Every structure is written in C-alpha cells, then in structure tokens.
Length: 418
Image (cartoon, rainbow, N blue to C red; front, side, top):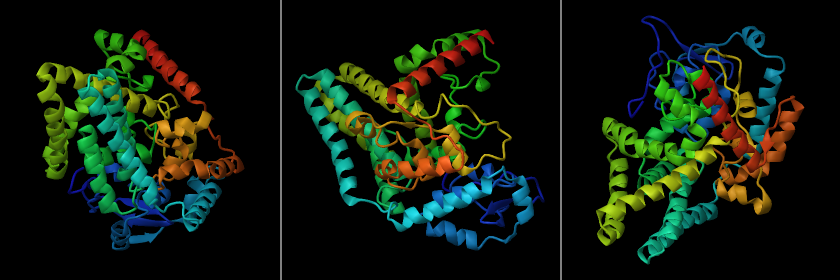
C-alpha cells in the first residue's frame, strides 16, 4: 500500500505467478503500484486477465512492466480442467464484446460531459453557501450536501481514470474533488476501492464487507461479539441512516484518511483538505461563530453521508457473499452474481441521482468506461448474460432500498440471537 507498492505475500524461496492471457508471470519480486490487491490473484490459479485488462486499460506503464516480467506458457489443459462448465466460452465472448465496444468508442471521454459534471458540483456548493449565508439554513445545507455527495460520484470516475482518460489529469481532479469537496484521500480510496472491484462480496477480499464495529452486511462477519456490540448491530436498520453514516464519514475524514496521507506523505492531498477547511472557516465560521458552524458542518456531513453510503449500499450489500477460498468465480460472474442495477426510473432520474452508478453490473465489468455510457450498453450486456445463462439483476430503486434495509434487519437479528 502507498507510493512504494506492495509485494505478493510469499514464503522465502517460493515463486509466485499470476495467470494472464494464457501465460504465467513471475511476480515474486514485483512491487505492485496498486497495492496488495495483487495478492488476490498471485499463486492462486485464478485467471487475472479480465481484471488486468480493465484496471489497466489506459496504463502504458502497466503493459511495460508486464513485458519485463519473467513468464512461461500456462498449461492449457489444466486451465480447461479447472474452469467451470461454459466458463471459457463466456470469457471469450466477453473479451470479444470488450474489443467491439472499444472499436465503437465507448471508452472515449466526453469533454462536454466532464464540464457539465464539474459545473454542477460547483453550482450546488455556490448556491448552498449563498442560501446558508442568507438565512436559508436547511436549503443551504441540503444544497451543500448534494454537492459533497456528487463530488463523491465524480471523484469516483477520476479514481477509475474514466473521466478524461488521462491518468495524471484524472488523478489530479480526483485529489481536488475528493480533498476539497469531501475532505478525504484519493490515494486511500483507490487502493481500497480496487480491492472491492476485484472481487465484490468476497469474504476476506472485498473491504466493503469489513464494516464492523459500526455495521454488518452479512452475518458471516459477526463473530465474537459482546452484548453491547450485538445490541448495536440489532438496531442497525435505524442506526445506519441515523448516526452510522456520519460516524463513518467523520472516521474517514479525520482519522483513516489523514493517517494514510501522513504515512505516504501525499502533501497534495493534505493541501486539498486544508483548503476545504479554510473555505469553510472563512465563509461559515467567521459568520456564525464556532458553535453554529460546527453544528451546521455536522448536519451537512450527515446529509451527504446518507446520500453516498445508502446509495452505495443498495447495489451490493444485500446480495450473497463469496467464500474466502473460492477460486472459480471469474470477472464476469462477480459482476453478474454479486452486483445489481437499479432501474433508471421516471425521466431517468435515478441515473442522475446516483451518478450513473445505478448501473453497477456494467460499472464492474468496465470500470474504465465513462459511467454515462453504461446505460447505453446495458441491453447488450443483458443479452450476453442471457446467452450464457447468467441472471441480469435489475430492480427498481425502491425494491433495492427495501432489500437493503431488510438485509440490515436480518443480519442484526441473526447477530443478536446467534
């Protein structure tokens, strides 16, 4: 983790290889710039081809590093023997579909769309501050919460390099959007979020399942809990929107992310967060005083945290989990079985409300694709799934929300009684 990268976890003298495009690459002594996510594939006979291609779609550096690694041809018969029925045909069709989408320009950025999204965030913040300073406290805080939440959606694109398509520019935009806009660390997010994308809903791999002590999305993480912890988790359907989302946001903003920034010495991210607090102090604290300023900040942070975290939760958290030692689930099946889409709804409002991340299936298949194009390819993805007998899970926003809170209640009850 961090600037230096992580090596695979290996015993002394042991060689560790990663399977890519029918070849085994020796990564024993490789420092992976993307962090410890390489350990999810190294030495486990898991084909990392689709993960590598989609994570590194825009990275010439990654391709060059791969070319310089020692490699050997993998045993094709062993690969075929280890595959699930129809798995190789599915991945072959997926790779061909990906090439076709590239030829059709679906991975190209749209400058007009970028300008619109950035302008929208700025407008929400400007209007929010203006309303707050002119006595419209509730409307002002709501507008600023929308701005902060939509900074989250937009920086997400920057972190996947799907915004401008230029890695340096996207990283810079992510640092500014996430630092000034939400008070958080872009580099911390990238390392953690890539683990989630590699193997969503997989125990011991998807960091979005490591949510205790504040919330539990599956009973399989509820072990060795004391009476107080059990009671808290039992009440999580109410506590999650009531206080947990705010505690998570504050924990990220003032502990986890700051600790990471200082550890990796990312002064650009620290400067962005300092600028955020200078702006708030100059516009709000000097006008209302420290007491009201703090209360307004907590209210605005709480509204924004609910906007982001609850919308995140509907796409994954109520779905089944993958066992820690699983080696069969591939890139496409992770997207098909362990993510779901929320329908666009009337006037395609949900597309806007969730920054196109309601199309989680497409987003997990193609994280480097500009997110506004996911609804366009949705029918073709559905057809691919149907061809190979995979479910295309798409529900209304309301259905997904109900499933999320029912799962919180069920997990809470199981933990309390277990």
